[in-house]
Image 1 (cartoon, rainbow, N blue to C red):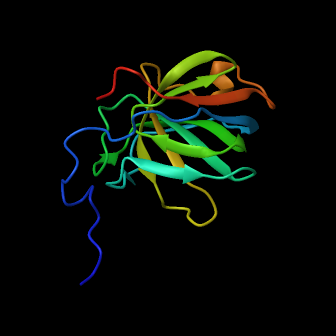
Image 2 (spheres, rainbow, N blue to C red; image 1 turned 60 degrees about the vertical axis):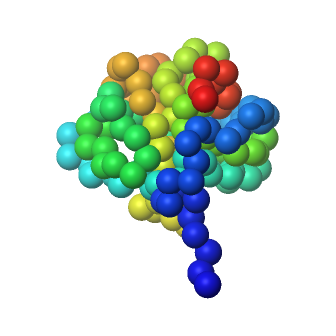
Image 3 (cartoon, rainbow, N blue to C red; image 1 turned 120 degrees about the horizontal axis):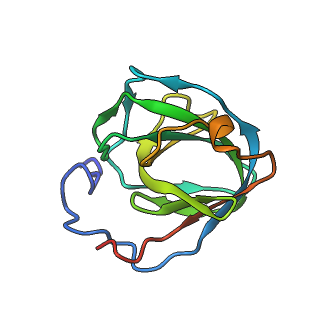
Length: 148
């Protein structure tokens, strides 16, 4: 019998991640650009493991995006190289240069295996250049303690 994806099967009624370490990276690319019709498909699973030295893209949206849905209105923040790996989970807070940018809305695998698109729900849909982030800036994903 084939394996069942517990997320697609709706087996989890709440977030099963009771505690986890922060994921730490540094910006290796600052991006500038916005799109209205990007059509990113967020995968159903709420988590992705990331390893040290991997490079992944950070994309912002102001849509009410959730796993399994599409995202169209986006701004490109940048690419981060993972310095301390771990597990990213929907609802984790993303901090750049110590400032909260938003929360992880989901993941798009369009460019895999090259890189993962990490989609961040943010009040402001602004690019990395517009935000004034700089190369080498610390990127940190921290578990939100109000997620259930």
